[in-house]
Amino acid sequence: MNPTLFIDNFTVLVEKAVRERLVSWGVEEYGLVTLERPATRSHGDLSTNIAMISAGTVRRPPREAAQSLIDDLENDSDIMGLCESIEVAGPGFINFSLTSKTLINAAGEALKAGLAFGGNVVAKSESILLEFVSANPTGPLHVGHARYAAYGDYLRRLLAFAGPGVT
Image (cartoon, rainbow, N blue to C red):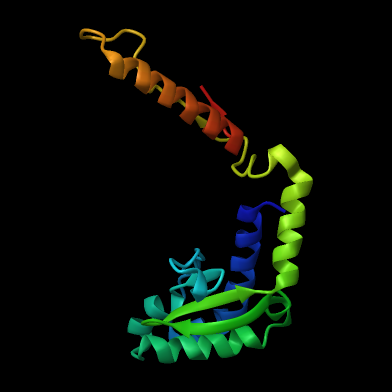
């Protein structure tokens, strides 16, 4: 499983675990849960700010809202099977520390994928038209044109590796 798919699946699990509480608080906008890597490694493997986003609607301090959501998350066996711990940090972030087994499985998937690891994370149906350097420059050529062309080619290759068709 590629990292993007893992995070997408984990996000769905988190949304499912906290949905009932969010609805009882009057927070009915789904898709609010986003996971990202914390700035500091000591804060865990993944983090969400859902408690801070919903705290205004609930009229509760974000850290208190975060602890209520953590209680729901800790009662979900699917999430706890992937997490070593879930903690409140800073002004109300919810930080997830994944288990060693989860991280080892992810590393095994990366090794199994080899050079293809990280590719094809975007739906093939998407396509991108990339014009980075004009084929018909309007002014005198300079060294920047060559540098920009090389950068544009690298960008094209990177986007093509991610999955979408690039023209």
